[in-house]
Length: 177
Image 1 (tube, one colour):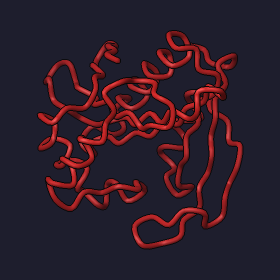
Image 2 (tube, helix red, strand yellow):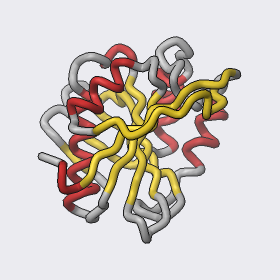
Image 3 (tube, rainbow, N blue to C red):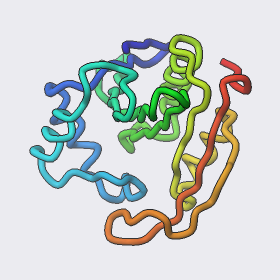
């Protein structure tokens, strides 16, 4: 899957992205709500090696990188979790370099991915799992039209602590691209 919008390019992650991904992903404070924060460049190598060669394989996570067109800099990544093929549902996760947060890049990238998932491969429902303390991500999901469906108390063990998990979802029929 390769997508392009006004300011960004989305493409599958590759081994050549390892240094850039490590640089923004290793920042614990910026990524404190993430389930994966690499400690070494080898952690990133392993992460990249697990990316499937095909987009839309059931029961896989597919990682895309976000490239800013103007600078040609890798500024983040989006994970797409494909559930079993009968239910036509996916989960999205996004990580953005803190230097590019608050500038609309995440919204632009997610819009491109959501459009592709709903309009090109006919997915039915997209889910986002968010730590309720992550107010920026919650606001972004709501701007994109996602609705809050659940709040699970201390349901995930992430970075050494039990945390709550808020589930947001969007149906294809409710998407306004």
